[in-house]
Structures are given as C-alpha cells and as structure tokens.
Image (cartoon, rainbow, N blue to C red; front, side, top):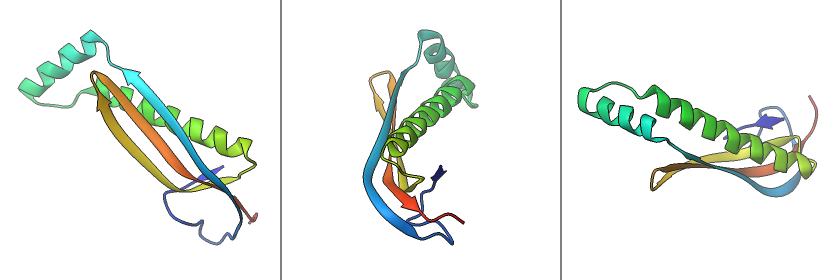
Length: 105
C-alpha cells in the first residue's frame, strides 16, 4: 500500500475516494525511562528510550491506519497527517489520511 503526505501519487490517477481513515497509538513510558530522560534533560543529550517509544507509536498508528484503508478496499492513503500529543505521562500518536484507489502503474 502506498502511504503519502502528498494529495496525490505522482503518475497515478485516483479512481475512487473511500473516506478518511485513522490510526491511533497511546504509549506509556515507564518510571526508568522517565528517570533517565530527566537525567538527560539536566546533562544534555538525546533520550534513546523515548525516541524508540515514539518510533514504535508512530509505526503502530500508521499500521492501524493502513489496515483500516485496506479493509475499505484502498490501495493507497493520501494526505497523511501525523499528530503527537502528551497526555499525562503517556504519548499519543494519531495518523489520518484519505483512503483511495489508484490506477496501477
């Protein structure tokens, strides 16, 4: 499945719009990640644990969105938007886009 942030797929014509699809992932960070991230804030540097959690949340949200698009019969999702929110000590990533059918190359 083609997933893109652009409003179309270069060289392919959209043959059907199937609706908006979404995917969400809410991930919690454990106390050890919080502790080490706090230390990183003080001494500087990147928090690898949080970066891994963010990547996992993004991947989960996109996969969920793709699965919902496939269930509608789509072979692409266009206009994808990713949003990130922090809810307490939880990280939420949501992905949304338009499920479409595009002509084959």
